[in-house]
Length: 266
Ligand code: DGL
Image (tube, rainbow, N blue to C red; front, side, top):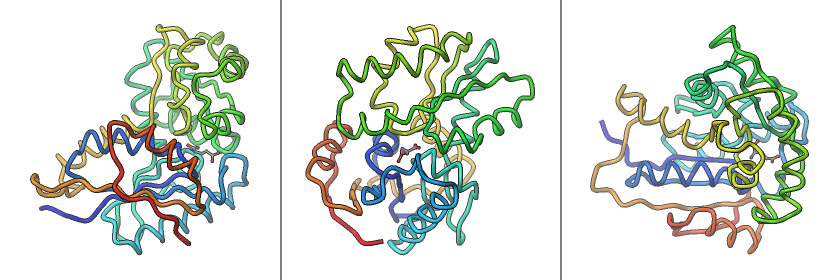
């Protein structure tokens, strides 16, 4: 069974583009509708109820655009939206695939999580990891300055290196061997994070974890792919107009290209 409709993906801003890029490369015939809720960014410092309300509005908006599945490319939103389905449409959340991947990688069962304040406070990762494996030890660190640094495009900057050291060094000292980048903005700062963790700690990226889950769902018949000769189309929508966002988006997505950029009212 084939389905030619696009896949909806949303985040508060540019972070989810790290997920979109992985998905677009892994599924080169699929089309994507990306929603960045830039008018209301950041989500990670807001209350659980507000994040839930924004997430529901985003899912509803994407469903009205006729998507066949929704990927919540935001950990803060995923931590408040556990449903695997909404109005009959599959919804992919980053918490489960990220946890599953981390458990496959860890050898000493000590797993670290970097996330926004909202994600860390929700304990969604800790609960999921312990549900999957009671023997795991979990260490979390909220990194509220990471999202503005990533949105600013300061991925290669001495200030980012200093902030990263301050957040990441204490969690490295706990003896973890696997670190979940529990915010989709953080892969943008991966090189700075890598400088502090060294190469012996595995970094888990939400985009890759979700792509693996969708690939399995295609095999199981839970996700209907497009026809093999379909042409990919990527449309980026934001809730606020920003040339800075669009330029950064092009840079993050490279070599993937978005055909259309527009501002929408959800
Ligand atoms: N990228 C989002 C996440 O994965 C949230 C960033 C924010 O808006 O605070 O949590």
